[in-house]
Image 1: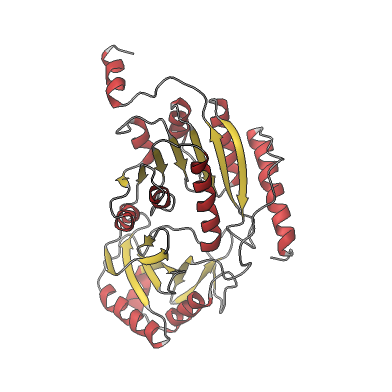
Image 2: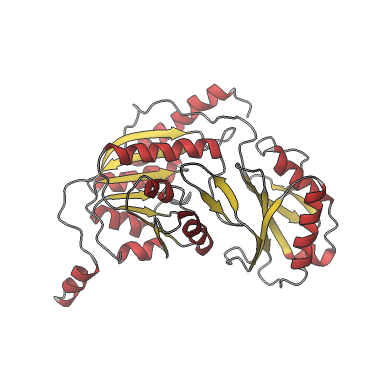
Length: 366
């Protein structure tokens, strides 16, 4: 944050280029300048707030030490005010001991907020309904509309209760939704640039059937289907695929499944375009191997971590994919992270085998 914004962009490009060279042995030095965010501040529309002994804040870097704050510069003011309201509420000791964190999120469409309460692994949900009601009333007193709230027990637990409606993330040519606790890209303006870049790649040539891995709430699936392409989206989050299906209205087939399991036995031939937007850890080794075996025209790979991206691209390049273009987007101003999109062109291979032909090979003992 001490660097002027234009200098930040220069360094982010250098980080991505150098990491690709050092870890992946890849030369992407010809990549264009980083595409900037519309705003240097107030861009983060989703954040996790931790709570300890009645205090709310972020964890200090590489520790569990809580840091309280009055205003976070990267959050829009509505979310700052939401945190102030939560801080002023008297939760009560019994409830406070249960809560590990609260995810606050805001709609860039209408400004509504949602909250998702993460409870301790052994905590029950007693008292949560009353708390959700009190929070909605307190926010309304400050002129903040709470679209929905939810809670779950444990870090990996599925939402146990959802009240209200999902947030609206975009409207216009296509719409996407996000229920409390589900993932969506935190910077709406840069995400629009990212989606438009994916659509422009698809429009350059007939992409064939599109398979969107780690599809989330349909961030790429729904716009692609809106332009007439046949799309299947796969994600392990039941909440995200539920939101995606509701927004798509039947235009996309969404599959709730672990991506590693799905790609081993896809429910149809894969020959067109694959979009892969994995979490920060990148593609699991098993997914990299399967993608290396598939015969696809295009692979559109999106990453928010330069190191895992370099590892994945090295593996995919060794499998015969050729990097066609690289675009870097400043999804996270005033941090050392960036979002990178890589368009890879597949090599000519024999037809990919679907479940039936895999079964025939097994029957022959291969």
